[in-house]
Each structure stands twice: as C-alpha cells, then as structure tokens.
Image (cartoon, rainbow, N blue to C red):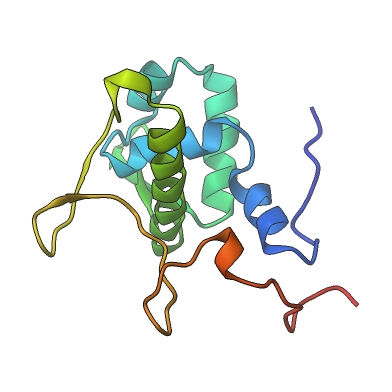
Length: 150
C-alpha cells in the first residue's frame, strides 16, 4: 500500500508522523529502547509479520532513527537507537504518560520510569524551557514560525 508522504508539509507534527506515524514504528522504537534489538526478538515480541517488520525497520534506518550493527557474518544485525531515535523515545514517554493517565485502568501503568539523576520513580512533566513553569496545550499560544507556510 502506498504511504502518504507528509515530509514536505510545513508542519512539524506531519513531518514527525512521516517518520513514526504508522502503528508499528513506535512499538518497534519502544522495543529497541528497552533492549529488544534483534529482528527475531522484535518479531516475537510484537507478533508482526516479517515483511512488515522489514519494511518498518528499513524506513526507520533510512530516517536515521535506528541504525543496524552486524553481530555475525551472515549478515545479521542488532538495531540501536541513534541520537535522533533517542529523542523520539522522549515523545513516546509523553504518550506513555497520557496512556497511563487515561487508559491504564485499575491495574495501573504497565511500565514505571526511574530517573537516573534522583533515583525516584517519576513521569514526564512538560515545562517551559525559559521559566520552568508547566507547559500544556492551554498554557501556550501557537504562533507562525520562520518555517511556516506562506
């Protein structure tokens, strides 16, 4: 199936969706982040078809989000996050916080995050990079930026 290309849109959300907007990509990134790094491991964890997983991994490699590292001579590869991919995991952590709040139910969150700096279990908290105050949808005004459409 032909994918819609959002990469040329003057919208950072659309451009990000062009990289990880189909449902398997965030789950693949999650797996690589937690150390599930080999094709067979990812496939087994997600129950995804080999064809779809190959397509998604190729796309993520092409986008510079994950990189392949050979681990034997066949060739077989481990997949690792690049710096660009690690920053996408930050986005996934925000999605996780939303899912924990609105969808986890009585069982509670399936994953907890321990912060390296303080050792405490915590969650993502969006804050203004200038003043440190909370920054949520109704705390900001979206304004045209230098890359906005004419």
